[in-house]
Image (cartoon, rainbow, N blue to C red; front, side, top):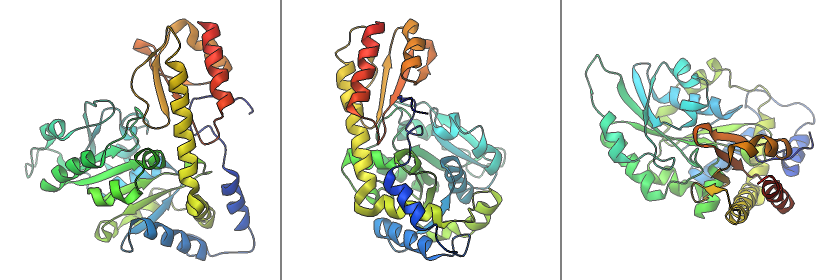
Length: 341
């Protein structure tokens, strides 16, 4: 339990302020399923970020948030277009396809991103009953390769989607890291850039659990409460998720956590760049560092600092930092790497 590593920001603990917020609402009774004052306050806090006319639904986890978002936007005859590296494609065990009935269409990524020119190849067959009808374009911010879409890149995708009658979903599991790196408010690269539905994550940035699905057009959320219940994402003691978001936004805790994680990743990148025998595969933009290392050292290095292999075929690994990563962690890891080399 005390071993530290760089496998995932999911492996980090819970920020003390979040734990304190949970404890504070653990007194007395409150009406369940979200009809409580803490949840209403949390929804109002999201409205301060994104606008008064949004609809907010809390879920247990990121997969639940993504599925709820996509299921609210589609019928089972639709297709969902995403990057071939997208979390909904690679890491959700087919949940989006099983629970929406939709076909996932993958687009080859370029440094984790997809681009309008590549998406256009899949925008056909409209009105043809033998073809899955394109319904949603889903993008991740931060991407699975640790890269970040610019505002203009998201706008270009949204414009293309809306020209063809599609919706845009943004998987924001690491949205705080993106906002911190871009130094922009959440709204600027989501709602204002043309995103229709957002999965807003907090678990990877110091929360215990819980994500939020945010609809920027209430008409798209008319059936969402039923879908959430059927998807087993309706938490009875909702105040314990809601209280976390209140603490998360208070005094910009989300930003402090994300900025620290990003800063630790840049430090790791800087130190790794000095090590002969290791090749960084791309520039670090958020809190992930990707590198190619000699295969022989991976296992002994993992025994000291656990992390995941990203692409075994070329010995590429992924190192993730989090809100509680320390400089001591970074230098200790780099020294262990040097010793093995």
